[in-house]
Amino acid sequence: MASSLYFILPALGGYTLTSLYLLKNPQILHKKKRAAFHCTHISHRGGSGERIESTMEAFTHAVEQGTGMLELDCHLTRDGHVVVSHDENLLRQTGHDVTISSLNLEELPLQKDRLEVTFYAGHYSTGTDRKFTLLEEVFRKFPKMPVNIEIKEDNSLLMEKNSTMPYSFSMRRGLQLLLLYYSGLLPFVPLGESFLQFYLPRIINRTYIPEERLLKNRMVIYLIEKLTMKKSLFKHLASRGIQVHLFVCNEDPDIEAAFEAGATGVMTDYPTLLTDYLHRHRSQD
Image (cartoon, rainbow, N blue to C red):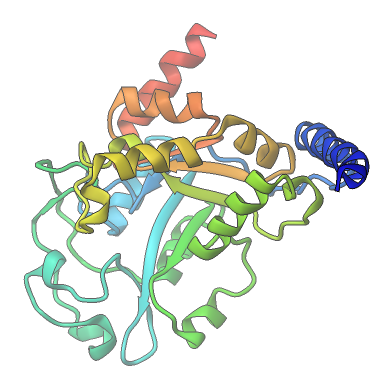
C-alpha cells in the first residue's frame, strides 16, 4: 500500500497541476469558438419591465435602447405557427385559462394591459401593444439582431424549426459542466455549446420570488452561489469563446455583481437601465 502511494501521489499532483494550467490556458487544447456576435446587453422577453413582454413593441423598444440581443421563448400553435410567449398556458398573461397549443393563431387572446414583471416582484409593465407575435416576424423586422430563443417544450417539430442555431447549456449539461470543473476534467473535454446562461443567485428571494419551495431556503441559495459563481470557470469558458450570460438583473448592484462574477453579458427586463449602466461605466474606464 505504501509503495503504491509513491506512484499515486505524483500522478495526482501532476494531474492537478496540468488541469489548473490548462484551465487558465485552454487555447493549448481547444480552438476558440468564432462567434458571429458578442453581447453584453440582453433584453429578457424583449425588456418586460418597460413594455408588455414578448410583444413587437417591447422588441422594438429594446433595440432602440441599444440592446445587443433579444431573449424570447416560443411555443407552437395548433395550426403550426411558432408564437413568441413565455408561457404555454395563457392565464397569467391574458387572464384566459387556455394553452397556445390548443388554439389556432387567430384565436390567441390579447395580453393583459398590465403585467407583473416576473423577475422584479411588485413591479408592473404596460404598453399599447398586447398582441402575440410570430417568431418569423421578429426575424423579419430585426434581420441583423441576435435572438436568444428558449424552446419551452419538448416538441420535435418546434426543435426542427430552430435546429441550425448556436445553442446554450441545458440544465443537465450545466450540471455536467460543474462536475467537470470540480473534478478537474473540464480543460480536457470539448464543448459544443456557445452560451452559458444562468441565474444570478443573489436575486433569488429578493427581486425574484421562486415558486419552488427548495429555492426559498437561504442555505440552498448560498450553496448554489458558492458552487456556481466561479470566476475561474467563467474566464475559462470565455477564453474558449463561450459567452456567459447571467440573469435577470434589474438593479444596478445586481448588474455590477454579474460583471464582477465574470459574466460576459447581462440579461435584464429594463434595457434602458442596462444601457445607462454600461454608458456610465464605459465613461469611467
